[in-house]
Image (cartoon, rainbow, N blue to C red):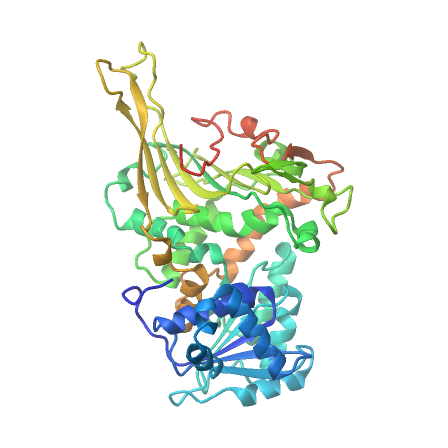
Length: 499
């Protein structure tokens, strides 16, 4: 949670409109985040939360909200006065998203706050509804900013491929200006991801080493112990490459690899990220097999419990070739990173859960300790995004005693002593929308170029008749050792405590 001494900028009073307010995202993330933001002053106390609700009475909707709070923000409903105060900010607009009159009712429900009708429209809905909603907002006059600002928030996926991403951007930009559109990626809202920027650009100690002269390779990973849970219908169409690498992990890569921006503003940062994407060496169709890995989890055991195979999950085709593990080896052809492999990978049903950025440095040019029992390892700098967010530095030190043998010493700097001090990604990102800061959001050209980069891989995998498999709860993914064979230290497998 954001505490009262952090980022203490109260946004202007706003009509916070949520489409899909009865859905899972709203219950688990949006409503709890708004509660915390109101409590610590990041959302103006005059702001209203407007839910667009279909086929439910206001009484039923408020009961749903209260039950969600009991599960994810119990401190609100346990205190009746707090609940009543929060409930007083809630406004329901009944109607179907496909009905134009719904948007007319929404327009009438916007409250004049401090002389303006500021509005944030959060689309917590399936992507196929984005265009319908923006068209409805346009026809109701809710996209123009004559009475106050109007900002549109959409969740990934931003398209399914390059063609659909371009089509979506074109439709959105017919109604809203680019600076009004906030393509939200909750990974970029994580405190540890933002700490990448601060670590790089607020410290001079690492900058001389942050290049091809000292870095052997970089691995950016997201390992999950969970399977696909209730997302089978989505995942069958998506797969790991679309779900994680094209969006979250490539975005993290741009933050790691970009040049220092001239200022910390949205366009300056995103311009540098675009330069990284432009410099990524395109993978030719005949090279896909060499530079990528795809695999699917088979049955196994995780934390002592049996885990079914992907093809045994509900709503998954028994002959599915959808990848639940994906890895890509990229190269960035520019002065700083020429020849340095960037290994991006993600997998479900892995041995442990962790998201990391691992910078592996080159080995020392001359080894004084070759004749001894232990040989110094190459240094590594690890940014742990989750869990246990923080920075880990692995370096060599002498073993205690009458010896010059060395061992790896691990220096840990947790991001926060108390995990409660770390703000939730949605708190940070919604606050940025409310204050008009687009730095952590994807611009249209970023989205399209990232799709362009992965398109040859998607096309090569489109018609595969079989897929390699790995046992759930293990690191036994075929071809990963081959993909990283010339990287110092090989494939870096995250552990819970960085051991």
